[in-house]
Length: 612
Image (cartoon, rainbow, N blue to C red; front, top):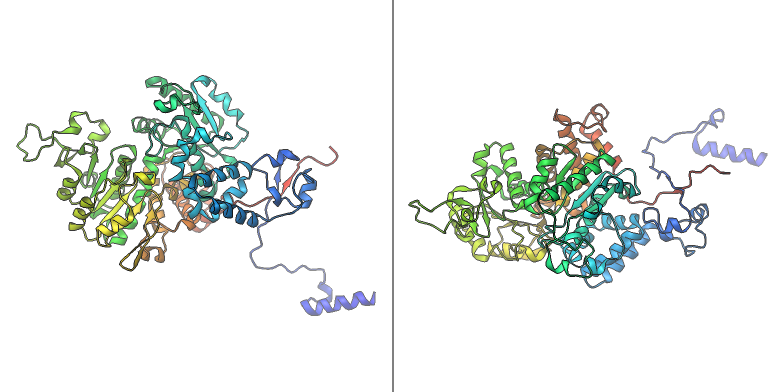
């Protein structure tokens, strides 16, 4: 007893606690650590190991192995998540080709979601190009040959009338984001049918890593309406329906059944349309955007992120978006979607819509969309090729009366004098020739050059070419990743104009706040937030986008900007988030950050009471 008393007295002397207050606990004023909440599961043994959402591999500690009947089913050594990440990274770096790296990552994704997303998040600059552009294009082309395990859901013509009931086959009750494609326009590769599934899978991996969406709350989908790709139709490795694509009402009825079924199962889900052919992308968006929580990433996401890049590039070039003139190579859904987003941005900056549209020349494979020269006294005439083959209503809106229809791109650059070249043609690489770039640079002190087409083989020019042909004056942003360029002892860091900078934040906002619709002004605010996320150091490096390693910070800024615009718009409902609960920007950012999923292992616990 005397020894105990002496120990007690010594402790009081060290802590300064009086004898009468020895049972009072002194609380620290420091921010308490956040401990992981347990995940409840009734799965046991090999069912845990075979479920990629729960599996931790050798990171299962010994008490957990006992608790979940795993003792003996795993090697005895216990590893940390960081050790696993390091080992996985070594494996990726040891593989020789991007496709083999992707196949390893697919296997990892299928056996351990937490480890996979931790690897993607921690090394996103290295891993993102392997799971999405440019590697995903090759992966889709080889999808049937390399097919190993199904991920996501497929809806085919043989399932008509059953879509609503099929969705209950999906094991997760709370889906927040669906990325869906019909495979008709995969990147710049055309119709790949059901093999386009690689796109939704890759996009959703970025949603989870970059945007903080829980992997259990995302669903990749292919609408298998057939394919018109003759090679796939005759291939024994094709995984989809080997029949021609549905057309007309049959196609739209198919999509309509899917949309009704999805929103019947998950009323608050966000549907992102991805890589639909131009002919159908715009009508589908217009049909559903005011009825459901949905957006088209090729039209709206690409436009939004390009606007962000243009805002940043204009700042770097010492100009304003209202003073810029654009020549866009490509009149598909992506090209015209980008132009529309830029016009919206110029209107927000003070121009009228007519003034803004007059600052654009759009070129198709037949040359510039311009006024007809036939029957006029115009000294220039190129046969009005765009008008002769027929202009859709969407393309007709982009006819520029200041230039003759069919004017070749080089002549259009010389005549129109653009300050920004936009490459969205998805044609074989090299569309922006040396002559075109040098002609542009003759009248522009800081040419803004954005070869946006994917994959890399489709890029209109490389950053090195743009920089060399402009004597180091170009501000460059690309659609696919390119490395730094050294020119005359100066290092240029071209940014990838990647939709990843905006779509995870947009989806995160809708998921967190229950945003009822994605408006054009939300997209503008998202672009502003992305551009404003750049640090002074990043601007000094010549970047037009933030360092991709800060992607979670960017996604948070984008999400908050979208939610704030939702609060300001009386036509938008956000039932999942009360304005009074987040009265200012700091509290909103803290709340959204708290909702973002982190790829960390959580304790697994059987909820069944003991004795039952």
